[in-house]
Image 1 (cartoon, helix red, strand yellow):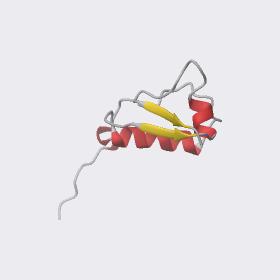
Image 2 (cartoon, helix red, strand yellow; image 1 turned 45 degrees about the vertical axis):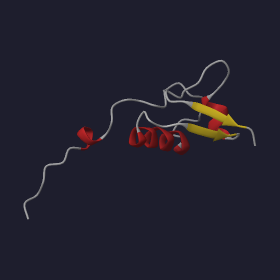
Image 3 (cartoon, helix red, strand yellow; image 1 turned 180 degrees about the vertical axis):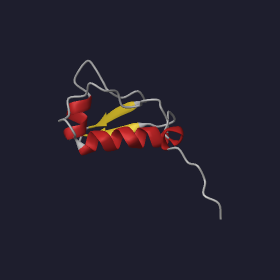
Length: 75
């Protein structure tokens, strides 16, 4: 079997669905995970977020870091 040339930068979607400027801690694994999941799922995604760290840090009124439809589900 011949080796294949695979370039990671060509496999990753360059569009950001979770904008920078959120208020999560530097190096927050949850923020990084959300960003990468957004890249994997693409623009046809709806985010439903319960109250928690990610909801508080990504949606301070009147702003949001989500570039896809987003809804807060209270408890």
